[in-house]
Length: 414
Image 1 (cartoon, rainbow, N blue to C red):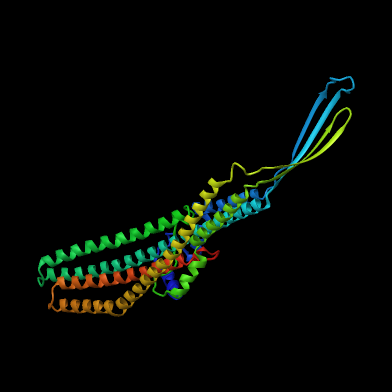
Image 2 (tube, helix red, strand yellow):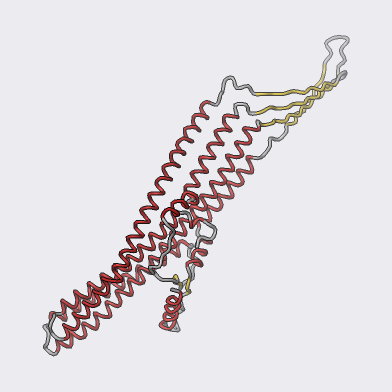
């Protein structure tokens, strides 16, 4: 495949006028890096991870001590009393319930982990989108080549028909029919070329317009695809799929949040030290303040979080089962595409090419009409297009399998 790609780019460089700037080739790896570097949505997701890390840091903060100071004046109401100034200061420190604090911190840590999985999920969706669009470009490009070959062949057929019509060997309606077929063929391949350009514009939008003015993806549509077995893909999905891991992090976060809420019925103790000084005495007082959960047992918040936790657990089980079914369906689609490619490349396309050659030979000898030649040409074109679409479906199924199994969520997915 590498030799074919090199030959294609060499032929492209030789066929382009020197005044026209050459297109910059981008491999799949280079294109993916470029898009990930500049895609606004993905970069915004990375900022959310930083925000979640900051929230975790805030959850670990300790309560600040409180210092209270007061000053007043004693007034004598008895003859034996000594008037004078009074000063008092109090130092208080709240000590949080270790169980509530630890559960709250772990809940925020699970939230930070959840944000990391969301980044991985955004990454793999973007990588899969890049690959899908790139292979769609290969499909449109190759489809345009097939349609242009058909157009060039119809031009030759039309020239032969014109000669026969001018010599009186064929009726004029055959030339009219050939001209109509040429016009339709030109419109079809021009439309395919335009669609290929639109796909490139879509990829450039993913990169926020940071791709060069003239660029092209490097590669072929191909039918050489390797994927692990169905059992391995399903096992990988349970371990690596970022969407599944995100839900698991949400379940863990809710579990720790529930533990923190239950423990918060006893929020902690406040230690107090007070010193009071008047004209005669200095008092040192140690105190302890505890909130007793007589009226509020946190029943509402606990019930609310327990309900949400049960809902997320059900969602996790449902998504895991659904993921297995999606992988199985994509696997079957890949197998069907492989069967179509084998049937078309080894049988149908050879038969269609042979039928066209027979029709052309028979037309030259006057044994068949132009209708038979055009019909044989349309059959060959249809088979070639079906083969290209089957190859594209094969790549699409592979991309979907790799997406579901979480292979694009890694740091280097390609």
